[in-house]
Length: 501
Image (cartoon, rainbow, N blue to C red; front, side, top):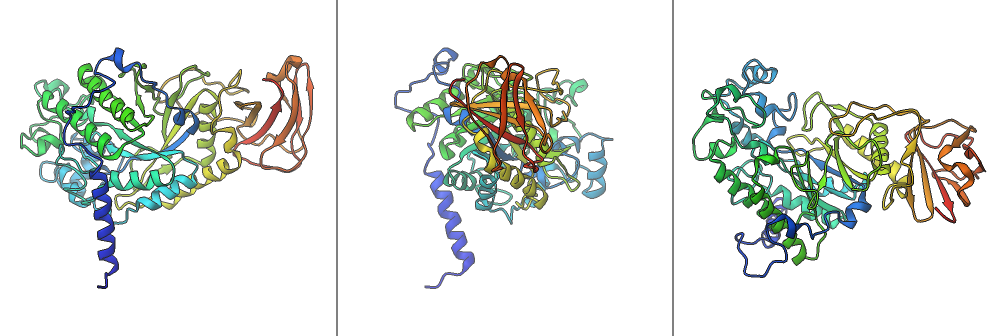
């Protein structure tokens, strides 16, 4: 029997979906004795920093889903379209009509993902140098990108009718990368229905408004908009995470803000479920949190669009986006340069952190060419200089140079580095000196952190150049003459081998 191409693709898709489902468990109950129980003392026994994560340093994920359909303003369009007078509201009324007539839920059939190819995504992420990759499993908008039995608003029952998380998990793991799912659901819960003075408080993503679908008590709509009893919301939150864990086996689960809306007892049940799953499947898993909303004994801190201003003992994560102005795709999306992102990555790694970079695909599933170009330029840099990033540790100092980061934390202002700004990493007897720009040809540079003759240097190499290094260890530091030709304008690396560090 001859099978046409469309039928073949449908068969492959069906088999893929079944293989994901076969990983799952029917409910939260289990008869097997669990190593971890749902209290913080028990859970603290788990090593919260996986070895693979400390070695990986760089990952990529995507803000993608129904929120990508409007392609206007930013990823808070689903919320702001309900705020009268906002630019999103005005755009929505002009383009689609009043939100009371065309609500956010009406975008769901428009999210078709018709050009989404998980293999293409995974290949791009791998070529970009990522060691872990994934997707927003559920954003604040209440939409699940997987085959959920808990949330009716999911990508198999509605929209594209595809198990997006499943397809990506298979493609990413097959490329040898670790798989990430991020979970932003906590903010979806509405908590101010009875207090009109706080209807616009962004503690809840969707503003309560009696004139809009966000206040609907319809059994289906109320789930999407978070207008349900909090006890039911907690139950769904826990159940959805259980589905993601046992159907797709993520290596890292990232949480966005407002996790403090979830009771500790519920959060502890999730952590116990995840850690027991890891124990049973011989996996090292990682949980990240923001703003202290989970204990550091079970999770790592994430600094959205920020980072530490010095090296730390604790390992941590920064999530940043390739885009400017929005995490999800918009028609006028601005982009950072590869140079900017490489500088941020190097700074983070020198201080004992990792970077997870967001990309913004179109609603149809295509990652735009300009974003791909940035990612591939990062990958090209890492192909030459990755040994100064992957599997490294911090050195005695994180760096030197004129540009100062005054504070640690999230949402830092953009920092523009100079070629005189230097960062250090270490691997065994090798110390990597990373200049955040090209310092110039045939120029003498002095690394002051090598002062006082406390090092025995056996070799100095220029990554990306075959020129022999001329250097001299002086009391005031290590003097090196740069190559006679430019090596890299983004960031340039010197590898110094010592007999003792």
